[in-house]
Image 1: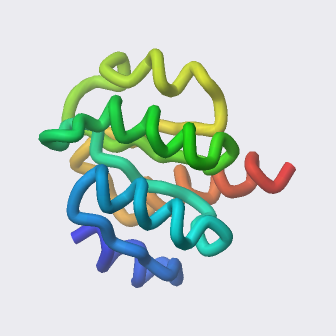
Image 2: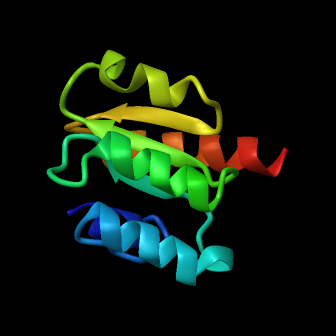
Length: 108
């Protein structure tokens, strides 16, 4: 569903079925990735572990953490900067707004 929303919003999507693939994709397509949308509640590797590994690969990549739980779940990761949170379920407009925000911040 998220890939379709992103496509509708005009983003080119590199879909990763799990955290390991996401990290490998970032490593191999470093210059093609402007932002990462990360599900915090995914199974192994966890969202927290994937977040940490993505930061090790490219510390400056903006990461939008999404979760059906309250924002406090990812507070530690989000405190590192260049990251944002969106609570599921979210609308197309909410997703667009948070992506524009992190992309604008990373351009500054």
